[in-house]
Image 1 (cartoon, rainbow, N blue to C red):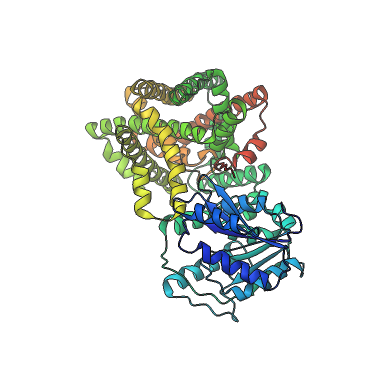
Image 2 (cartoon, rainbow, N blue to C red):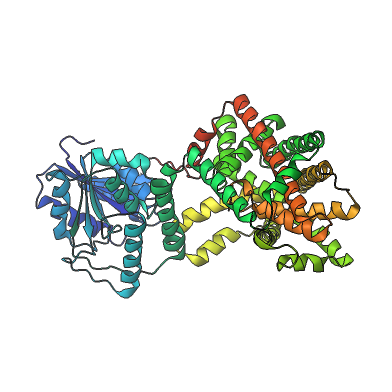
Length: 606
């Protein structure tokens, strides 16, 4: 760092060969008009350019000691490049603006002095204040207005313009903010401003004269996918996540189940349901739990085969424990947070990278959904062949099973159908893409966007899809995982059939077939995290199908569904608690740590 430097101005540059020399010259001339000599520096933060920008920046730095060139071998993104340069800057006042000089440089003094001498922590130019003059054609103005309005409403920001590339920071304040900033691209500006306000830093917004340079267009990947998802992420992080404690999530889940049960009492006598459940043979119910326990080592073996095909060999015992913990997390926390816990456990205990952890989980989920869909489809074809499909159609329209049970079952079956079709489409696409050398990810993203953010998105998706395709391309692994999935979900159905026996229901071939269908549809229905652990959706689908297609009444079918689901959840929780003690994993900590599991780490050298 240079002695005496108080102000560091960073110019983020990507392929700016035609304009960077003029930008540096204008910046130096403007700074020299209000700052003492030797108190400022201009840094060209060259972000993995593939034109003449690096050579020009190096020459400018060699010719003028006030200029520095910081190079990155790989693209870091807008926010990443700024952070990388700020870390290496010498000044206590850190400034940046866009190299196209769209903002009138007469405002630079106010920007710098707002932080340097007026004790603001953050200062930002604004194109949306009444006093400013900004040429905003509709193709720029409408998206900008919509975006800033959305940020103000959703993230409760008091600022009018979050994306103006004309900002200054106090070093101490920025260093305090950056650990909490997750984005490294176009949303970086917004996230810094929003979190600065939330953390009580003094933020100054002042009007600037602004003239657009070059062409602009709404970019699907950057603006819709990138910026929109980041607004939702930040809203969740700031407004939702702090309120979702384990007590709150358990309470909300319990409340949902209670409400569903209360609504169901309008059509069923709860006393009858309780009496039916109390009459179940406890020894046979225990036997059903033991049958379900047998499926868990198979889950560990299947997960071992998936990871092995991706180049990671682990013991099935550890992997069974990891599966137990993640499934317990899905029961305890909302929005299937346990899925991310799996990636955290294998990363923390076995150093398996997060992208591989998520990809292996995706493979497992796809095989689960495909297997369940296959089981349900085979039985459905059998029902059609025997003429029983009409009874199911009557039930779906509410003719055989009335009230809340029918409504819940109808919703569940619609969800199940959608999930099943999605699973079939996903497997077809994965297998097809695994057998070709064509890069479909890069091609599709490239058609949607030419922005640099698209490269980042494509890179993350490629890494993920590549791991998934590895399993699909290995016919041996594909076969083992498929057979394992069939055994796992067959045992899941057998568990329910044993529960039928506990209620003294005769296991005829027809009832066994309906049992396979009911359990499969119930499992498909609870894939979407509409209720904690799928409670309600599973029971609704199961009850509707069993009551419509067998002599088992609605009350008995619901009682069987509740006991079946409870047995499976209790085995899962018992295994999860045991595995957490064995592997020394805190479920709460795992959920917290896994929230950042999707972040991609980037490194670069000077």
